[in-house]
Length: 173
Image (cartoon, rainbow, N blue to C red):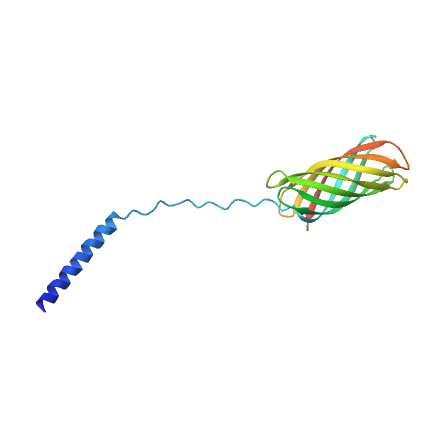
């Protein structure tokens, strides 16, 4: 029994000594700082609608208001879609309807550039080709601001070209 007690005390002392030595030599790994995950790029795909105000540059005929509704699909590199637009110029009692094809490209997490090409009809009987270039900036998950330069060229029922600037705000659904 004396042997068992002596061996037990020696084993406990050895374990305590070895544990202290190991604990003293342990160096914890350096702490890694917590970093938030990178912000996800804005998802421009899906339905959207916007309202805008515009100003005629050529001819310098005044201001107008309008609205668009459209849909975009594609990848993180290129987007494709279509847009239906309505425009009204109260100073001339002028209105038009347009339908456009749209191609767009995100240029940052919250911005994209786009080009539209389409056809339109107005209340004076003119059919025209419509083209535009512009950009959009998302200031929330579903709200954005939009600006574009628009040109129109009569193809029947009239002649000439027009150009204008538009600024608007919109919502994605």
